[in-house]
Length: 249
Image 1 (spheres, rainbow, N blue to C red):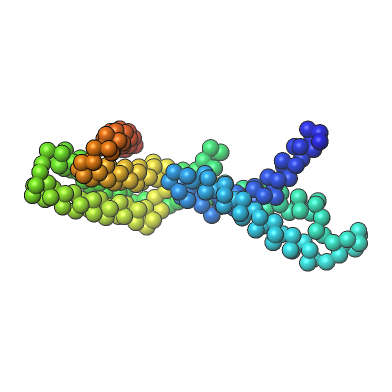
Image 2 (image 1 turned 90 degrees about the vertical axis):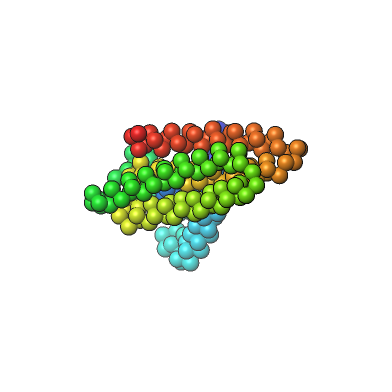
């Protein structure tokens, strides 16, 4: 098999079993990490392959039921027609995904521009919510330090307070997302702030789990969870710095 034939086979496999479905996935889910926070690209690839197979089957069914081409005396289910239709699907889905903001590297991100004007009151409300979120986060950090030094009833009381703060933090997070939906706040900065809030909550929850395992006192795993907690704390500090940078503080 020559090099040209190998290239043709690779392109054919991409056109038939990957590109149409992958572009359609980007049409349906244009935002980063919308399918999964850590393995978003993997989810897109797998769904792209699955949808491409579905598109191929449906396309073949349609081409096979059109009838006979009077010029050739054959049906329309031919390699050329499959190539053309799949190429058209790919281009159409790509353009659609581009206008939905699925390809920020091409200059059109999902949240590059405001979809509509945002009033000063709405903008101030968003800033106030972010300030409240920041205050809750700082208070949680202070509670964690106190928990490390406390024992008995005092520790139980602090844990109860920490749980309430986590609940308040969740409510603030939901309020930020709700306000974003209501006012169509879709700037890149606002989106990243919301994603960072979500990441911060995830890391804090992991740190909390590490604390619980450390408190159990199992010698075999204490060192492991202490090291894990140190790494998570470093990640949390990096998220803090990024949030402050985006807020201009």
